[in-house]
Amino acid sequence: MHILTLLSALRYNLEAEWKNSFPHLREMDREELFEKARTEILDDLVTLNGISAATWESSLRMQLWNDLADHVFTEIFEPAQQLDDLGAFQTNIDIWLRDWVEKDLPKTAVKVGWKTLYSQLENKLSSVQHSPGHDKIFDQLKKKVLQETRNRHTWDHKAENRL
Image (cartoon, rainbow, N blue to C red; front, side, top):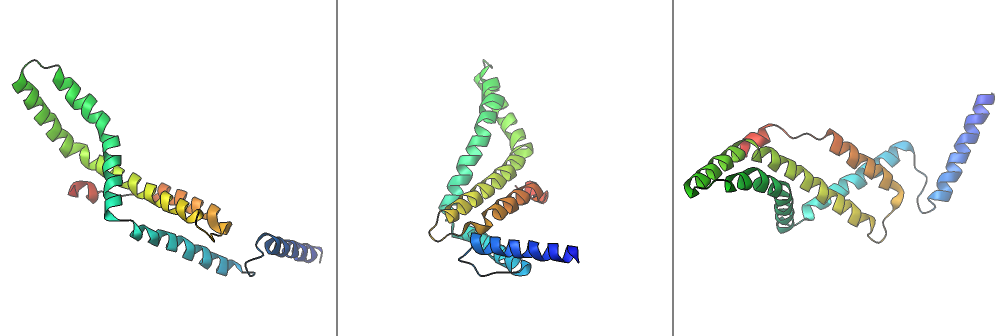
């Protein structure tokens, strides 16, 4: 009987906390909360469709340049610059660029796509948080879902082969 009283008191305290913390929301059970959170997260993901092609292209281009610039200059152009003969310079540049395009560029492009996707998603989630009428009730959950998505997401290895 003592455990029953304890559980009843705990339930009352949790219900009171809910009413005080979220007076603008009706009381919901676990399933309703789950569905509401799921729907909000999916709605936030759908907002990615609203990002223009120009924005995607600009973000991809900027991220690609940030990831590639150092490699291109330090691993390709600087070593080639040490050569005295213009023909050898051009030949080595062609060979190194071809090898790099065949081996490293596809992996880098997939990584850049991944970074850009999550960067845009974080930007969208941030803009949603600052929109008028935003309810902060699921913000921590959304952050956790984003973190778990990042940790679990893997690209199909065929993506690299197609590039």
